[in-house]
Image (cartoon, rainbow, N blue to C red; front, side):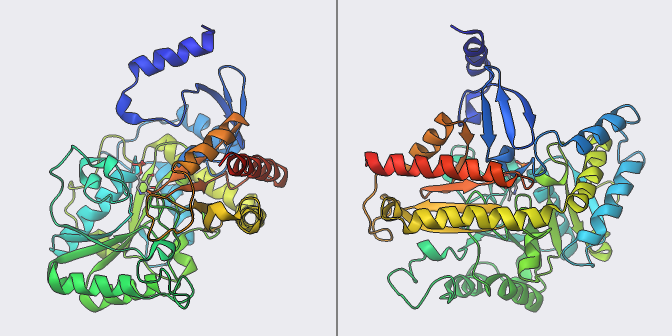
Length: 446
Ligand SMILES: Cc1ncc(COP(=O)(O)O)c(C=O)c1O
C-alpha cells in the first residue's frame, strides 16, 4: 500500500464514522482556489470547505494577520477582558451590516453556537418560548440546533428528544412546490404565496404569536438545496413579525460575507433582521461566529449569561479584520458578479442542451451560491422526467476523477457550487469545463 493510502486508512480507522465524508483524500496544503493531497494531486476546490474559505485557501493577508496575532495575544478571554482584535473587527463589521440598527455584537466559535446564541437572545428578550423554522433549514448539529435543522433526517435520527418549542413552516421552494407544480402561471416570478399562508395558519393553530419568540430563516436555503425565495417572501415574513412582535432571525452563516453577491443576502430584499447570525466567511477558516442585534435588544440579557472560553478568539478576530479589508481592497463583490454570470451561463447552456437538458430540472442561485437540480426519480409526481437515482453523486464522482471538488445538497438531486469568491476567470473556466464533461458523460451512460 502506498504511503498516502496508508495514511488515509489510518484516518478511516481512527476518525469517527459519524462524520461521513465525500472522499478519503488526505489534504496537505491549500492556496487560492486549489488544494493539494498527500499524493501530490491538485484539486480545484468548488466547495471552499462548505463556503468558508471565501477568499481562497491561505489568503496571504489573512494568514499574515493571524500569524502576527499568534505572536501577540492568542487568548483574551471575553468574560475577563476585551481585546483589541475584537474591537477592530466590530469597527469593520458595523458599516457592512445589512441594517444600521445592528450595532452590538456577540462572538462565538461555530455557526451552530451562534444560532443558539440568537435563540437564547430571542427567548430572553421576548419572554416567549417558541421558534418557527423553515422546512429544509440547516442550522447545525449541536443539541440546540438539531431540533432547528429540517433539511435531512440524518442530522436528527436517533438523537431525540430535542429542544422543545420548535415549529416548522414551508419555505417557498418553487420547483418542488406542490401548489405551483403543473400550473404554468405559478412559480418563482409569481409565487402561489402558500408558504406565507401556512405561516399565518401556524400562528393561528399551533403557536400563538404571544408564545412565538422568533422566526429563524436562512435567506437562501443552504443544505436544503440552494433555494432562493421568490421576491415577496422575506418582506412578507418581516411584516408578519412586525405585526406580532416576533423577532426575525436571519441565519447568514452560509449566505453572508459576499457569497450571494451582496455583503449579506438580506440586502437583496432590503429586509432588516432583528438578529443576524454570521460565521464561515467571517474569518476565512479560523473558527469564528457571531450575532449582531440592536443594542437595546442585545442588552436585555443578564451579564454572565453569555460567553464561553474560546468565543471571539483574538487570532480568529484578527483574521476577520484582514478578511474585511481584503473584501474591499480586492473588490471581491465585483468578481463575484462576473464569475456568477460565467457559471450561470455554463449551467443554463447545459439545461438547454439537447445532450443534457432532459436531466436538468432547475438552475438557480445568487452570486456564487448556485445550485443545479437534476430531476429526482424518487419524487415522481413532481418530476415527470425519467432519470436514474443518484445522478448528482455520479456527476460529483466524475468531477472528482477530473480533479475538482463539488458538493451535493438537499434531499433532491442537487449539486451546489461554492467556489472561492476570489476565483479567477480561468479557474472558473476550468471548473465549468470539468462539470460540463461530467454531466455529458453521465448523460451518455444513462
Ligand atoms: C446556514 C447555516 N447555519 C448554521 C450552520 C452551522 O455552522 P457550523 O457548522 O459552523 O456549526 C451552517 C453550516 O453549514 C449553515 O450552513
